[in-house]
Every structure is written in structure tokens, then in C-alpha cells.
Amino acid sequence: MNKINSISLLVIILLGFQTCKPKQISEEWNQIFKNHEAQGTFVLKKKSKKDLLVHNISRSETTFVPASTFKIMNSMIALQTSAINHIADTIKWDGVERSFRSWNRDHTMKSAFSVSCVWFYQELARRICESAMQEWLNKSNYGNKKIEKAIDRFWLDGNLAISAKEQVAFLEKLIDNRLPFKTDIQESVKKIMITDSTDAYTIHSKTGWSNKIGWNIGYIETDKDIWIFAMNIDMENLKDAKKRTLITYDILREQGIIE
Image 1 (cartoon, rainbow, N blue to C red):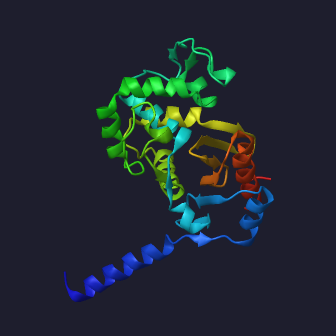
Image 2 (image 1 turned 30 degrees about the vertical axis):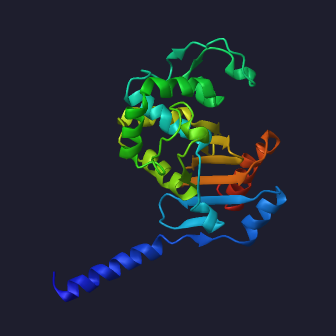
């Protein structure tokens, strides 16, 4: 490669980095977090653009346990490895009474995902086994890819960790079916992620909470575009759980994505 071509390539690379540079959102999003008395980060990406809009850039790059947001990945790995064959297949409840009444029954993947049923996904993880789980974490380049805890706990209080910015990158691949799973599996998981739907928009999302960190990640489809989001906040207890979705909706409204 001659000198001129080398310089041209360097310029293109540098320009690429510039267009992907996060933009700090200050007053509007700062006020939303203050209104909800929350400390955290929010990352928003319009799919047709490269720029990220970010509240608290440094925290957006900080990794935390994914908690129940890992159910997105766990679902795809389970289906890919035939730990379960279909989102409508049932796993029978073990009869152990747990703190959330909605967990205390038989569940399909679809119903378990919607109520964030931990025991169901712990059973899936045990069926998948550690070697297969590690293989698919590596193939998907998910977070730091670490399994250093029991196979049915590593995403809750183990060393697996992911940042809000990484969550957005992961979701963008899922939207495009570019993760290393069968296309029909990715499509099925996107369907069970639907948490809100109107004539104007559809939201696919998943919340999570562990180690005093609350998550809400997902994407919203409108007739104009797709916006991908990932947020986390300090969350001491479940009374703060609603803040995750309230902040998300306030920011989507502030951006004019929803009314």
C-alpha cells in the first residue's frame, strides 16, 4: 500500500471513530434523572444513525452483572442447544414457593420471560451446561464472557458483566439477526420481548435487578425508525423498580419518539 493510500485509510478510520463518538445529553436527561431521584446512565441509538446519545458517558462504559436482562441471551442459547425446543414448551414448576406468586406455577418460555421467572431460566441454564453456555457467550461476544459462578447464578451475582453501551450493540445485532443463532430463534425471542404495543409504536424490552443495579434495555419500533436503549440505575430495593421504565418513557417522550 503506498503512502497516499495509507493516509486515506487513516483518515477514513478516524472519521469513523468520530461519527461513533457518544454525545453527552446534559440538561434534559439530567433533569429526568433528578425528577426520579435516580443515579445511573441511559444510552439511546437511532438505528439509522451511528451516534449515541448518552446520559453519564463514564457510567455507560462501566460493566455490571446483567441480571435478568440475560434472559434474552439465555433464551437464545437454550433454543439453539435444544435445552428447550420452542418458546411455547412448558417446564413444570418444582413446587417450591417463591416470593413472587406469578413464578409459582408451570411456565413456558414466553410466560416465564414476561414475569421474569428466575427458577425457569436457572433450569434452562442447568440443561444448557457450562461448556455450551461458555461457547455461545464467546461466539456472541457477550459482555466480558465470564462464567465464574454456579451455572444457574453467574448472571445474577457472578462475574459476568456488561455495560450499557455493550447492551445497545448486542441488541442492534439481535434486531438485524446478526447474532450467531438461527434466524428463527432470534425472531422468536424478539417476539417474547414485546412489553408495550400501540398503533404508534412497539417496545421490546427486558428489565433486571441484582447487586443493587437495576436495568432496562430494549428497542422501540415506529413507522419512522428503530431506537435502541439501555439504562441502569442504582436500585437499593424493589420499591425503586418502577423508576427504570418511568425514566425510559420520559426520555422517549423528551426525544419525540413517543407522545
